[in-house]
Image (cartoon, rainbow, N blue to C red; front, side):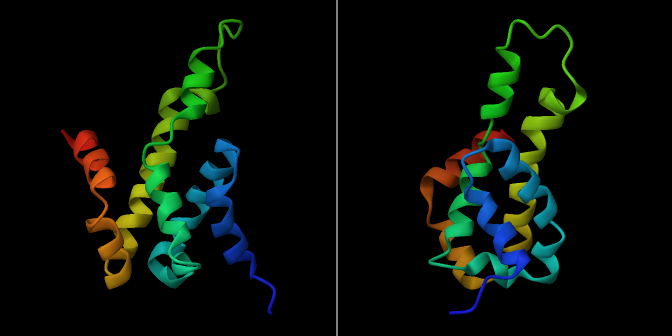
Length: 122
């Protein structure tokens, strides 16, 4: 079995337990969603499942906002610069790769995901 490429390893970080790592991975994968969309089709579309979850990922925001001892947060910990980019990047990637029939089917048949999207735009 061949060793995964660096790009394939980056896609695997979408599933990481640390939200900040998932955020960095999603941010760095946006350009590849247009040029190499096939990297998101590994292992029964696991990266697609991860991206669907990231659309509603806000754990870092809640943690940063509920930390009472922080009087002034660094810019990278603010809601605008932490919650929104991870969801925005995940959604951007999903939009870019949704031209693939398998991915489109996965997105369109997931009622919970569609409800999340509808809630975000209404």
